[in-house]
Image (cartoon, rainbow, N blue to C red):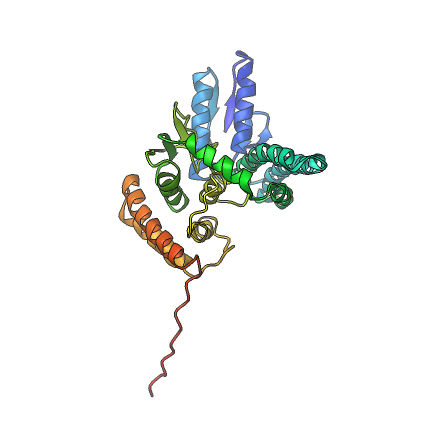
Length: 325
C-alpha cells in the first residue's frame, strides 16, 4: 500500500501507523508498506485505504513483484526481524513474571499469573496471526509462556474462573468471518453447546469488522477469542472456559490437527473427519447450514469419544490380495 496522509489531524499518522503494525505490514519506504498477498491481507489493506481516503489522504494498493534491488528473501527477512522483536518482548515479560512470582503465597501467585497469562496468550495469538514467515523467536516465546502456564496449573482456581467467565458470556452475538470451516464450525458448535446456549451468530466478510454492543468475535483478526500460542480457537475456548466434558479433549485434538496441519496428535480418524467437514463446505455455501451440519458431526464425535473414554480409533487391518496368474 502506497499512501500519503494530510498534515492534519496530527493523530492520523499515529493511528495509521498503529493499524499497519497490527496488520503485520513492514515498511519498504516511509509511505510504502507491504504484506504477503492473500485474500485476507488484501481486505485488510482495502479497509485501511478507505480510512485513509475518508480522512483526506491518498492510498493505492498494488499487487507487486520484486524484480531488482530487494529480493524476496530479503523482504521475508524484514518480516521475521519485526516478529522476532515482538516475540522477544513477550518472552522477556513472561520470564520476568516467572522470576518475580517466586516467594509469594500460592494463592497470590496464581491470581497474578492468571491475569497476566490471559493477556500474554492473547498477545501471542495476535503476533502468530501476522507471523507470515515463521520467525525464529516464536519457539522461545512459546516456551516462556508454557512455563508461565505451568505455574498456573489446572486446579480449582482455573475452574472457578472458567465458570464465572461462562456466566458473563450468555445471550451474546458471536461474530466470525463468513465461509466457516473447521475451527470456526467447531468453535461455534462449542459456544452454543457449552458456553452460550442462546448464542446468535453473525458471519461477516472481513477481518476488519468492528463489533457492536453485546457482540464477541472469535477466530478472526483482533477477536476476543482466537488462536493462543499453539492452540487453535477451539482449544483456547476449552481452556479459558475450563471445559472438561468427557470426550471434549479428544475432539479438540482432531480439530487442532485439521486446522493447524501440524499432526501434533496424529489421531488416525483425523483425515476422515477432515474429509467430512470438507464435504459439508462443498455441498453448502450458507454458513448457517454449515454450522448445522458440522454441529451434528461434532455431536456424534463427542458422543463416540465420551463413550470410549477418548481412546483413539483403531485403523482397519490391511488385506492384500494375491495376484492371479
